[in-house]
Length: 635
Image 1 (cartoon, helix red, strand yellow):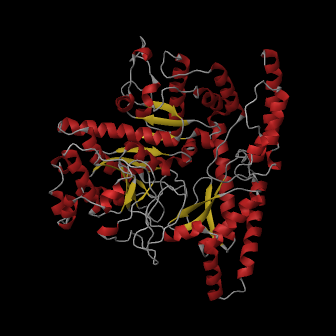
Image 2 (tube, helix red, strand yellow; image 1 turned 90 degrees about the vertical axis):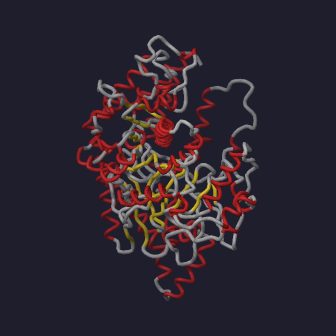
Image 3 (cartoon, one colour; image 1 turned 180 degrees about the vertical axis):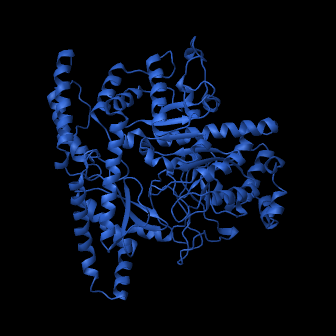
C-alpha cells in the first residue's frame, strides 16, 4: 500500500467508523456466538502472498463484527463506560503515525512535555491539590499517564513498599528487605476492585479486606480496628487503597476519616477513582473527594467516562522520588545530557516504553472544553437518575444500594436465583447488556449509563425490556404456595451456580496472604506455624522447595465450588455467618489463586517435628504471641 492508496483506504475506513457509530443502535449489543466461532472463518495458515485490501476490508463484517460486544451502544450497560470520541480517535491516528517510544525526555521531548502539561490541566480540572502538580516549584509531585487503573494501583503499592522498607532499614539495618516484606500488610474495602488483590500478589504482601459499612463505604473505625489487630499479630501496615466509586455500587470511601488514621500510622493512601474521577470535573460532585489532600497518589480513567478511548489512566503522586526509588534503572544506553533536569517517565512506571497517549487527551480537552465535558457527565448522571426512578416505581424491584452518578444497582425482590434468571434472559436476548455483582451476599444487576448518545428514549426502551422479562419470570410463581416456591428455587440451584456461590461465600474480614497466595482467617495460629516453618528453613540456610501447582483438596467434607471471582474463600455453614468457620489444625483448607508457592499446603498439612511441637505449645493470647515477634515489629 503506497501513500496514494493509503489516502483512499484511510477515507474509506473513516467512513466505515462514522457509519458504525451513527447506526450503532441497529446492531445487537451482545454477540450471539460461542467460544471458537472465529476459527472456521479464517485460514489455518497465514497467507504466503499479500492479499488485496478489499478482501481484508470485507472480512471486518464477516469475521470480526459477529463477535463484537458494542461498547459504544446506548444499550450497553455492563461494567463501566469505555467511551471514545472523534477527537480522541484522531489523536491516536496521529500518535500511531509518529510512533513515539517516549521512555525518556530525549527519546521524544514533545511526548514527555505535552504529558506534563496536560496532566496539570486535568489535575486542576478535577480539583486536585497543588501538591500533585508538575508546575509547582516547591514540590516533587506530578502526573503520569498509565495504561490502566490496575497498573496505577500496582505502581503505588510498589512505591509504598519501597518507602516502608527503606524507612525500616534505616532504623534496623540488619534486617533484609525480604524479612520486612514478609510482615507488610495492605488494606482496602471489601468492595474494592480485584486489582488491589492482584497488586498484593505481585508485591508479595498481605492484604486485609476491611468490612464496609451499611452504605458500602470504608470508614475510619473499621480501618483503625484492622490496623490494631494486625499490629498485635506482628504485621506492618503500609498501604491503603481507598476507592471513590466502587465497582459494585459506586460507593465512596471516607477519605477524611481514613486520611487522619493513615497519616498517624505512616501509611501510603492511594485513591482508585477509575470511573468516578471524570465526574469531579463537575464541582457539584467534588464533595466525594473531601480529604484528598491527605492522600499520596490518585488515579482515574479518562478512558472510561471522559471520551478518551482506551488506554488512558491519569495518575498523580505527591512525591515522584518514591516512584524513582521503586523503578529507577539507568543503563548507559538510556542516559542523556538532560537527565535530572527533564522528566524521564520510564522511572514512573513498570514498563520501559510508552505510547504518545497525551495527544488524544489533549485533543479531547481542547475540542470539548471543560464546559462540554461537564455537560456530557451531567447528562449521564441524569439518565441514571431517570432509570432509578423507574425501578423505584415498580414494587417488584428493589435498590440494594444508593445510586451515585450514572450507575444504578437493582434486583428482583426475593431469592438471588430470580435476579440471576432475569439477567440471563436479558443478556440472551442481545438487546441490552448488563453484568452482575454481589452486595453483602445479594445478587444484583448493575445498570450503567455508558454511551455518549444515550437519551430518554433509550432508557424507556431498556426499562420496558426489563419489565417484560421480569413479568415472564414472576408470573409462573404467583400461583405457588410458599413451600412450592422454595422447592422451585431449590431446584434452580443446578442452573444458577453463581447464586449458590454467593449464598455460601464468606465476606470480610479475611487476610489474603500474598506471600504465598493463600487466604487465611484472622486470629488463626496457623499463620504463625507457617511463619515459624519458613523462619526455621531460613536459619538453616535451606530453600523452600517449590512443586508444581495442585488443585486444592477438599478437607473435612466441606463442599467446594468452582467459581470465577476475584477472590476464593472458604464455604461457610448453612446459617451464612459473616466470619470464616473455625477449622482444626489437622485439616486446614487453603484456597488459593494457583500461583506462587504451592508448598504451603504441605507445610501446614505435613509439618516438621519442630513445627508440630510449636503448634502443640502455641500460645493462645496476643500477649504471648507478641513475645515471639521480632523487636522491630513491636517498635
